[in-house]
Image 1 (tube, helix red, strand yellow):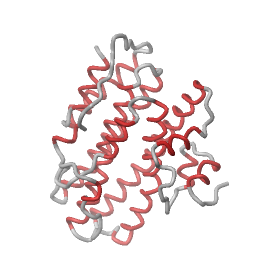
Image 2: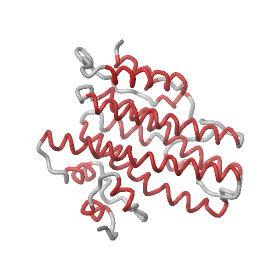
Image 3: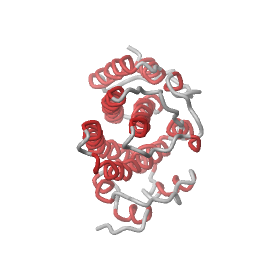
Image 4: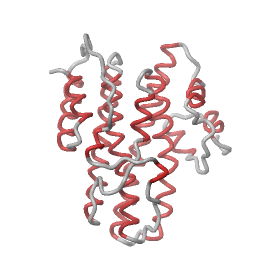
Length: 271
């Protein structure tokens, strides 16, 4: 079995059942093999995200506003946007294994486990979309996370800082705000299902950010770098000054952020 061929096939397919089957095969293989050869392997840089065959990709400014959650289309737009994030996260987790082949077995298992979580999240949300008469691909999307994966493809420390420790951690800030907006309509069955789904995703995303935190610090220790390297990387990507109106102190603390880091990101109380 060639792990990297399987991963490449998993990343490039838009068939979610095939993606799940291949990811499970990779997980089982890595569980049984501590030493996995990456000899003569050079990862390719993907030109397009796998969802390009399903979705119309536009500039973020062209996306339909996510509002009017009391309407079928408004709720569908919201669910689709979250579904897209979860789909994107599948390929990002798989790419973390594929692209950085020299990392230890525990690293590979961590990100394959994340990929399986994200597949489950995607399927859960897509089922909700179908329940209200839509499917993944019915609304336009942007390729921001895919673009970030391309930009960080050359250095694992940047990948761990930007994807899990910045973008996924930002999701921990946003998730409760979405639930808050939906809460007054929680008696509607579909809205209740969405809130329940968001609760599952929220709890599991904390563990995903934890993994990113763990491997970011692992690389820092290997390279004898200060953990404040995180902020240097954010500055490089022009993310340090992004406005954060709601930062989830407890979730970020649970995921490995220190109070010192959180206070650098926003003006908040943290003990």
